[in-house]
Amino acid sequence: MPPSTGAFDEMKAEQQNRFSERLLELLDHVEYRRVETGEDMEDVARIRFKAYKMADILPLSGTMLIDDIDFDSHAYVFGIYFEERLISTVRVHHVTPEHRISSSGSVFGAEIDSFLDAGLSLIDPVRLAADPEILREMPAIPYLTLRVATMASEHFDVDRCLSLVKPQHAAFYKRVFDADTIVSPQKNCGDYKIDLTLLAARVREIRPWLYTRFPFFDSEPFERRMMFGDDREAQYAPLTVLPTARLALTMQSRARSQA
Image (spheres, rainbow, N blue to C red):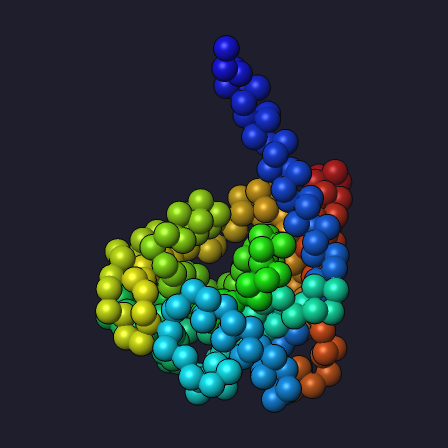
């Protein structure tokens, strides 16, 4: 006899709690580094090359993968380190009606422009890449990496967070971020050798339940400032940024108990 709905819901909630606690435990060993030096950029580029070569995403030459908009004023490149080992990377674009440079815009320009022409602001997380060998050992890496996008969305207070992904990955973004499909799967997407689809999450709307369901995505304001502060702030920021998700969870629990 199948479990009752109540028992099933409790089992599912328990599984969710165990998963979230596991991610928080992993975060205790994670550091985020904003990449601003040539040496760190070379390490990031090697990770990109290894990941893209395995997935056959882009035509590659040489051993590294760096492009001009890595250095755009609204682009933020990060390395994610686990126990001081680089495991993944992501580049985040803060896209506004006044500053429209983004990777998603180079592929689906009309759709991105429609957002911007309506006055919306966007976070465009791209160049997601994980060391293939480590990813097999640690399948939670995408969550640890996409946490950068959730922080950027809150820091810049944007309207949408984009996901330019393979069609087979769309279900993940719908399940985790309740993302809406903006462009159905398309072939012949510029330089990309794969089909792509574009999704967008309504970040302000989903944030309360996202942090409740996945508390490891949460962060404290000072962490976000260290991650995304401008150059004048960054020169005083530490080389690495330690996650504050566990602190944010503690602060929320304390606030609820005092309410």
